[in-house]
Image (cartoon, rainbow, N blue to C red; front, side):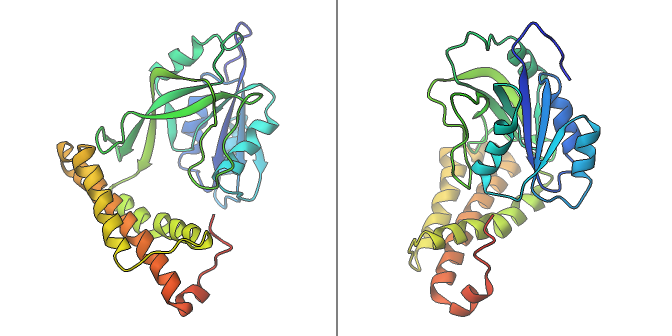
Length: 268
């Protein structure tokens, strides 16, 4: 871990669930700029926790609370005021390390800093479909801000953020098959459950309209058409995810048998 005493110390935080394949590389990346490492684990049954402890990270075991509440557990337990939060499948680039090390955190007026995110399928960086630049607030002052309470896709609620001219890498999907299986599986099911619990109503046209809209937005307006097979695949996956999300919601509304078999207490 970085042990410099001439700069403001940083705590690195990661939330995990069965991330044995990713956690070592993620923590090694964080250790380049962080003085403390915290892993908040929600019940891994693989070697995630053991591997994290072996790197010197402190592991906090916390049943999953949803995205925002879970990501706020680590910062509340941090020793240092500034927190760098990464997902287990994210890595800092050399460019990001340099940019972060150059920050004057003791005197800055900003309460958070954002990095551009390079999203990958396998080893392929997808630069279209709205996947880049994908600015994400990752470094923040826990005394002034935190993640939102949203249990899905939470973000840091900064009031005076700064965008850094640097990237981090996000290994989102191992291959094209995973891109579609996640969209057709837990992503769309979770979203449908959330909408159902919120009382959202849809009709028979909703799945088609939302699916088509998602595809057109990615493929045409966000120029997925210029990214070859990967651009088409990302656009189709977005369309499939949107279609199934609303189709599953409609099914929950219309079919009591399907609804009764679904555990709505296990959304997260």
